[in-house]
Image (cartoon, helix red, strand yellow):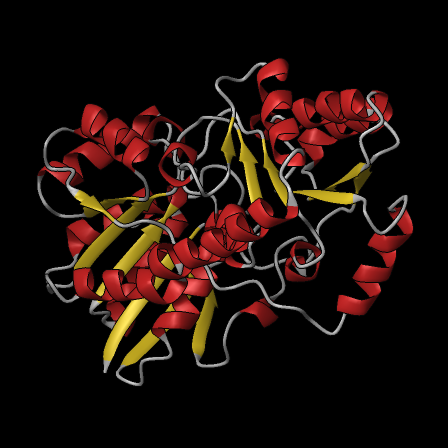
Length: 369
């Protein structure tokens, strides 16, 4: 039995966390794999439901305290020493919480770390200094999730950064709440021809929701038959931003809060809005593509690698006029072109960005050590 351990800080509401769960679940489909998913922090009601984790994936929490917690290094070491993994795969800033254990463990096992964002955002300065040592000594094997992330990693860490594995995602699926969600969205529409835009992601400055608000104001003024759903919650430090967005939103924008059944919303949407200031390879975008929801995005990070002609729309820059222009280009598509576009998006997802394909690439990497 090949024991794979995935470690992340916590199962908060974010794309990297969704990715870790989906990757763990997919790897566990292989009867030759034993998969353990580790959260440094204990699980709380503010995190994603543990029901998302497959029953054959072991889930362990280590009780990290907020801020500096020296004991977490010892807990990680004790856990890895006990379970004797074949490979440990870290995500987000969990990468530098395992390093103390790695230096003390003599037994050989694979050590992989994935950059889920631009590397300067993936870890603070001291974390990047530690990363550089471990990467250059070939102790940890870094993985970039997009061409843009890889370019930044090469610049930050040097020529040892070579591996690129695009993120993958499960296909979005309907749940038992589908009819309820459909009815609630239909109630917001002016008529059956109303186009439904959706944005999925935590509300904070990086996601640049203000651009959606300002764009939707213009569309409302121009009489466009569209609504936008903003699906995502916020952390306490971002409440002022959320309140400001709600205060200034036009009537065609609706906030849903966190949703655990995002597939129901995507299956009732026409276009996917992503206006981020920077991105790695967003899982929410891949989920939207899996069911043919058309991406309309800003030109940052991994979005530059995904949104090609025939897949969606990418604004020229971050200005509102530029973004408004591509939104209107989408709205001007006739039904024939729109159908062809949606079919192509689903085909590209299946061939290049499915979780099944992604997990196979990681398994090959794990077994290469």
